[in-house]
Image 1 (cartoon, helix red, strand yellow):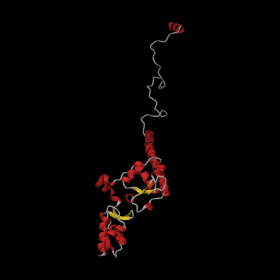
Image 2: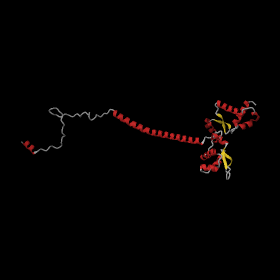
Image 3: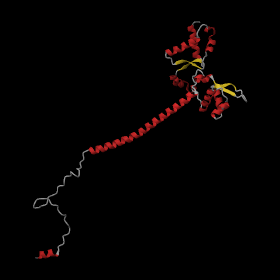
Image 4: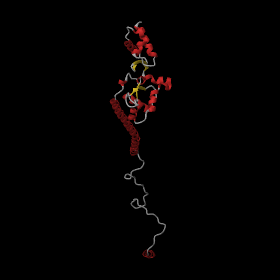
Length: 267
């Protein structure tokens, strides 16, 4: 069989499978047709072909095997097609338990409970049903408790080729510190924006008040200042020198006449 035909067969197998195909599985399917063909090189060429034509799909090495998957930018459209079927929902307790199993495997249920501080029987049953963990054996100790470990489905779900790609605990601790710093900076920036937004109206209000005061000072006034007031014209009294004299107010009662004035009047 020609190499080009073998390549198309491999591409077909990778397209229809719902699980990652290892090199051994592909060779076992091809059988004698794989003689003389470099299967791993052909798989690499298939992946390069999809990359060169900017396909929405890509060939990925996941869980010790190859599988086609859609690119991240098209996830939202796939979710609209399959609704909730594409979403694997896990509770916080399930994620915590799964993380402990991933980093401490193989591990017993009692050891998980010692780390978490709570009972995890129900959570382990959920993870077993989701095929994210499985029983890998028994611990050679009193009672021979079951040992749990992660599955190929775990690797496939999180897009890992193998467990060595898990970030180290030191990297997680550093990332957590960076996340805390970033969150703190974001909160601080939001507080500054809210404070500046609240102070802006007050500053604008003060500017408006000062502007009104300046306009009031610069505006022409109809009132004449006291120092420059024009004296009110009065009607001049008949006087020999023609000067104006202030007239005394008239009294309703006649002034009293003294005895001396009456005696002079009689004379």
